[in-house]
Image 1 (cartoon, helix red, strand yellow):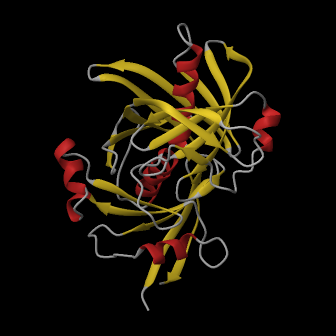
Image 2 (cartoon, helix red, strand yellow):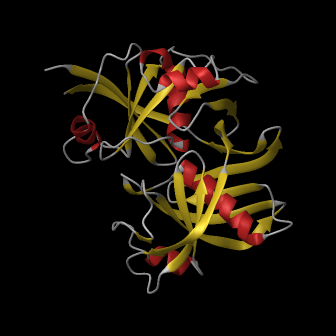
Image 3 (cartoon, rainbow, N blue to C red):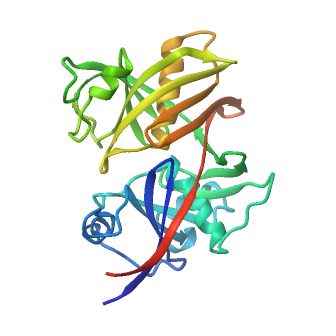
Length: 291
């Protein structure tokens, strides 16, 4: 049976299994990917990420058409083996994986373009680890009601798309946030056609310190369950909170998740408002796995 050399890494506790397949020769089934991510019988992780050159898989064609410098594509699958468009924590650790394995270089002030199914994302090294430009975002709005175990009534959720779909729910207190049982999939009414990550958010006191907004978040990720962190979820949570706060709300946010703290920043660009995510990216260990 074939052997797969892998590396385990995480960003604020959101953990992934990485393997290099530059020529796109390793085609694993969703069942095999789920087995790798299984925490009891596999390596364990919130997802599996294959490092493949954009030119060597069909989904990479769109990335190269968008930016011909996007040599590498982040082929990301959730823990259940399903395909996902984008992962904000995963792409930062992916950049670290590429650099540590000599597959890409990224010096101070330089930008690394990486293809994803949600579009090309640009990364830079910063003091916290890496910053990724998540590109333009979209307010989906809507009237989604969210039911979660141990929350007594359904709560309204705000739809935010940052390359993948999110529903953000505001809660009244940290005690309420802690009480939610996110081992069960939150129920969305109406259902999201392709599913969605669901974030539960509370503002911290004070909400704004030195011009920076501060919130706390937990998340149930589509295809992975509750995770210690979700990068795109942190971005969606900050965007939703700013939307609710109204005029005068800051464009810079700190988002506390169970696995640490992430930074989110919004700014105006020629093609519309962009949002970035900053945070650590760590490689933990590597090994070989029989598939």
